[in-house]
Length: 301
Image 1 (cartoon, rainbow, N blue to C red):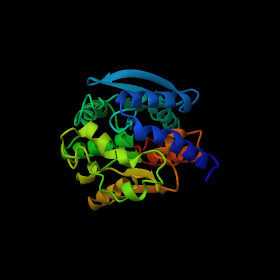
Image 2 (spheres, rainbow, N blue to C red; image 1 turned 180 degrees about the horizontal axis):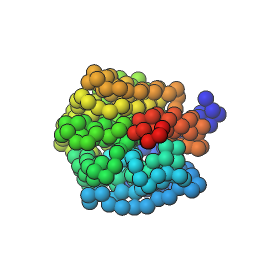
Image 3 (cartoon, rainbow, N blue to C red; image 1 turned 45 degrees about the vertical axis):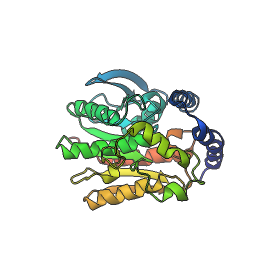
Image 4 (cartoon, rainbow, N blue to C red; image 1 turned 90 degrees about the horizontal axis):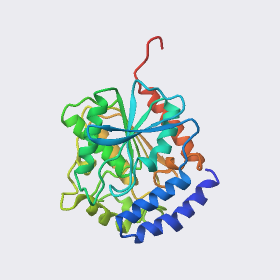
């Protein structure tokens, strides 16, 4: 483990966890995350960002140096408890992953709660996916709430017989909005980012009166027969650790091929801290290798 890890964990515990434990206004959440992104999440040299619209959904394209204009693309759904976050907060991480895989990354700007409650985010994600998959093969990904959204989207794709993604990857996904996993309580003190006491409140902002066990909101309760390979990672001190563990079990029950990486003492969605955190860079390297193994073989290879 690097020397940066304990320092980052301490900083997150003292600043971000305390902030998240008390903030009430969704706009304050959004402004804070955007500010942090500008300070900490700088893009790699040679990358390029552009905007477009896919079936009415605004998207940001992140292309790392050398990324192809054609062929498969990544569709990445950002985290932020369905309330905050944006393509801007995550585009630097996706530019780094694009640089490593050679694939462009498409980040939808899906509608946020509480102004737009469930299932608005899923509807936007599905619209963007259908439009993109009509043009090219897709690697589907997401982090935190966006990771759960990616898995809920996968379940909808399989349910309706749509063109499947080549593979799916998730960082610290939120897969159970009933919050029945034991780690919500057992890791409440060890968790350095997310205050366990606020989970239900933030979920209500998204769900409103909807059933939290609806598989479109909590993919842990969905079915995944015929799913493509899935790669997931989470830290062993995260309150969402059991969301990944149980999600992996559910996918395997339905015959899925799952790579489940449980990392030691790393913060929620740590890959976003690359290159500040060496472990973040290492995780992106590992994931990029996994993604490249899932791409169609080109002629002569």
